[in-house]
Length: 169
Image (cartoon, rainbow, N blue to C red):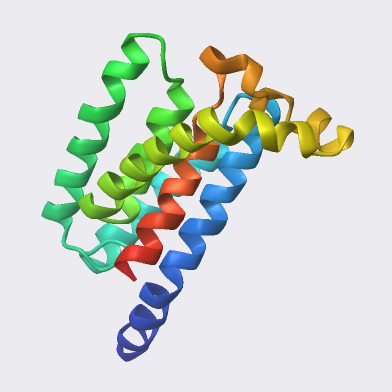
């Protein structure tokens, strides 16, 4: 069991990078297909729960009680959007998995950062979009600012996750 004590700190140090890679995969898939695979969302949630049960803390080092508070926050902040048809089920599962893997501060920071990113895209997106090469516009067609009411949410959540990790780590 001594090897567990040496592995845990290195896993906790890798957690922010792992969460960013995972978030980027979700964002790319959502930007291309307006859908996030259950393999990504539920897979991350399952790994986070297994790690939480195994070690007693999340990937970012917070206790299980704090993780449950983060999960409650994620659900309270995302389920109304899902029920109102403004958010997809994949976005709710993404935030729940993030909460299980991290902390309430990561969840709140991610949602706040996503709001800022959405505002920035509303203001500057049309200018940026026109300057993208046609091949990029084809690959990221769901991000077209003309689709204002139907933009995928995960790319904005990724921006918020990046901001929260830079702020917290």
